[in-house]
Length: 397
Image 1 (spheres, rainbow, N blue to C red):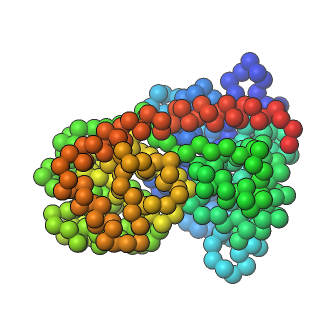
Image 2 (cartoon, helix red, strand yellow):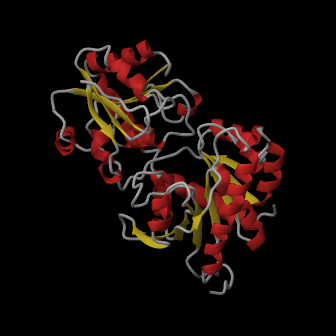
């Protein structure tokens, strides 16, 4: 179909989100935070679509996924999802990394552009989540098709120089109208590296979607999860790896009497043992029950952008026990949390024991999370992002 230009002012404005991973029937829990972003755009009145090219050489099952599908938000608004297939050379490992990243980026770009060419109208905005390859491609296509392009930078660490080289990225990202960083730390990643300028970068921490995440009575939540009411259970949501600290949480709990733990996710470092009540994925619709069934959310993570799971746990009224690192400065406060050195098993255990043994502390921290959650609702965050995008869209690059 012929592209006839961007939507006119009197029509509903449209946004195309570029994702490198997005929930699908094969991986229903992958990058759920991008889905929540898309749903929020749709609920705000934007015509929202997602393009997530699928690297079929990495998983042959991706070839079975439909090219086009639709989703409905809790408020019955529609999000269209495109999954064109492409060949990727990968973005990790040391052997010829930059060359492989450039190949993957170009292949990803061709897949995204194939979707654009089939649209009746160009979107009013391109919104790329993560730097590689999505934001580079958004910048290129934004310039080519005269579409305002934006990047949300939420990576736990900065890999731009390693994968592309900062000088190369500075040229490649010149088509971006604005950058949304999820923390002050992430703003420093991209500004201090020189790949984008400070005057187009804002900070809006990750939040939770209030339509889904809210406090549920613990008895109801434990019944839903199939857990005993009389156990003291802590846990987290995330990948089972060294960074998130699944085995550090297990080691800390095994130092304590009558403390059990639950981990929602998957990965290579699968926790277990007699204290483990859960160690597998949880469907997104069931996560509010998971959080609400915990006595405390405990995440000994080493690196984050701004942890969406922590924000969701706060939205469900959980006491937060997490790392004393800069990425938590917008989520962990004295009234709702205890912070610790995530590499110190004894400190993690001490924080858990403090909540378990101090009368009234768990309830006090719960009230603190509920109070703080008022500033972490995704609707407010997205209103700020949309206002930023609308302002920047008409500025000269």
